[in-house]
Picture (cartoon, rainbow, N blue to C red):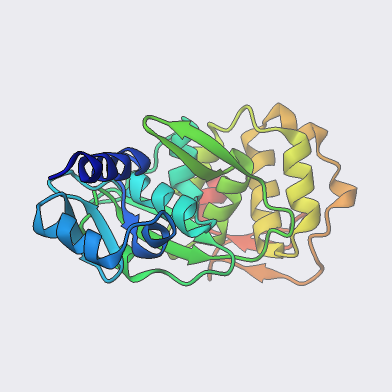
Length: 254
């Protein structure tokens, strides 16, 4: 291999995210022709994962690295969300059974095929939500990656959105008990700007029950929780303040 070609492959390997992916559209924009990429695969530098998706041969694939690669190279905004975001913010871990799960949220994008392949160190679970009109998302440096991540306040609300299908009410209350340092201004903004009444009522009920200091700083008069009744459990306890019936286990927990 010539010095020029060696420089080209070294530049490619340097540009990629650690344990991540390479997307052919982005590679083309960087000046890598299909013929050159085919040569790299034949030479054992790159391996094909899916159509238009490659990775560094013999390098383990990371869900974090793949997600950063996709966002950076393809100009996407998939973010780590729900309990996975809370875990990155060092809050109480929620541990599903089996292979570790990476919860990923997107407002408008469909799930790419490569996320469904099951070859990463974590299983991608993608959900779509448009309930946050003023999303609270930031970039978090974690190990070797810079990741789009929901704020802790929004991440917990995302968990509430996914009850009871993905999370139980009790598991989330155990997490709420650990959320002693949420920012009341961010909580206020999210509660005022979302129209999702179940989310708002559950969040306020759990925060009040947990007795967090920041709950006292929330202006409840500015939060519209709706007027209709919600039934979250068939034979639960009715909470008149929040107009909802919740599981007795949650109501009776002290």
